[in-house]
Image (cartoon, rainbow, N blue to C red; front, top):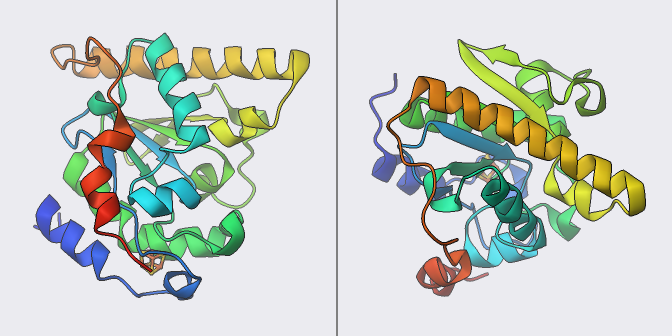
Length: 219
Ligand code: SF4
């Protein structure tokens, strides 16, 4: 344990200039969304344009799809912890490299893991999965299977952005796969933390919730 608290970590994060990504034309590091006391941590790749604007992960088109998938398995965004491997938006929304992921996550995600102490981690996409399990870890081959990270069960599945690129029968199949992966994750979290409340009565409006943070972010 580092002894750091969430407020101190957020302060450190906001000031971070530890790698060249900070200077690729973004508004600075994005933080987490949701509840730091949640048993469920979802780890994505890196921020896109809407995330850079609002300062939180997965609030753009991919985030809206994530919200729908969470709702389908009895979860709302305010009752899960969502973060990214890479905190600063790469230029032109390119996918961050594994090296960029490692550099950022070894500074920040490791702190988040200490602070949140999730019971279950869901890796959304290749960058997150490969951070935990190395360059050869394949989402296509391994989604839906349980892995272990320092005693925490890890479920790899598709990133919502992948689903947004699918069409027809492939899209239908991919959506069902994500549904079953999320369902397995929430079932395992409930075994470990049965008293936690996983869902609000209505989906929260994330963009409204983070409007103040958005107004504080400038190039
Ligand atoms: S990407 Fe991560 S390590 Fe690099 S400057 Fe941003 S917060 Fe710091």
